[in-house]
Image (cartoon, rainbow, N blue to C red; front, top):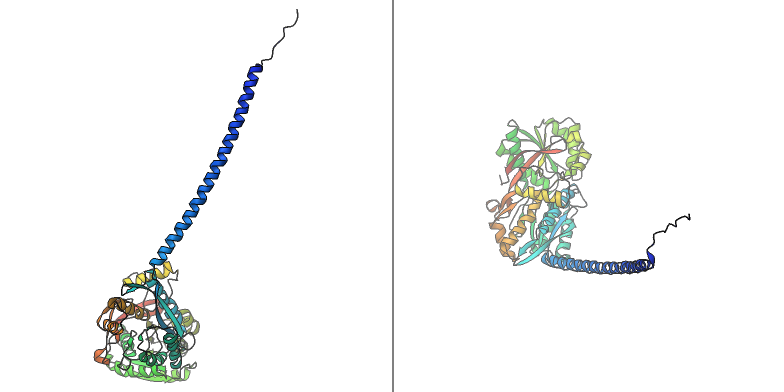
Length: 439
């Protein structure tokens, strides 16, 4: 029997043709899909390009409008400082860490508005070299080259002596943050925001007397320039009011580095406290040499210390302990709102160190000017002076106003709070405060 043939299943010709047609159509469909996918990608790419272009144009438009919304006008404020000379220790704390950041904060908040116009502040700085000729030269640049109408925050008595005659001649308003030149009708455009030596010495000695009631014998050594001469006068005025005895009250040549001969005589008097207004670099040497000679009493420094690291580098950390100085604690959570506001801006916006030192008495020279300009709502000089004389200002030293009519015959001396701190380790600790009024 023949073997049965087994047929292999087949699609047949018709089915094969159908399969071919199906495969062909599938290929065309896939090609069509691929083409469509490319077209979609191209459309998406074009959409992204147009969207990106639109975003860029929109950002530019918004930036242009935002910039236009910011103050386009500039108000220049002149400031002389001591890049060279005995007061260099003060530049970092006063100019770099106080005045400049304050101006930045004011601009950050929209600048100031006067007469319906907004203005951005610009601090123009010149070197006064801590001398009278240097002060005049710096003022000449500010007044004639930079065309400033206001000078703020200056702290050198010698430099102010050079600035004020020129400023008066050109009717430039000067609001000094420091220095010891008393207000007078001789300089009608000069406002003393910084405390006088009588005010400072009275405030720090009053707090010391409250803390140490048996305090009696006070020794003083100051420079043989105008500052030292005025400090000697302040001592003769203040000491009787506080029942204090001046056992040593001498002056040294500015720039002295060897104070041992002075201190040898001074220590014979066995003082309870040592008082000085000399520059911070001089004080650092004084502190070092006084401690080396065995002095254990109070060191009262009734002006600004400046950069603490620079001071300790000269005086030594151990010798520096316990000194008192004029100081506001910006890290204190209980500080007045103005101080907390500035500290937050300084540390969070400017990324400054919370340990940096600041000087509110210098900064308030800018604050009172800005507030007076906004209150007067004009740059008219006489109207501005009237506001400065008659208004109260909210500043980093608290609420304050210009007084002094009875003492100086003109309302030009700022009355404010004088805060005092003691150095412990590398930290300042608040020990007391007193209202700065002429004793």
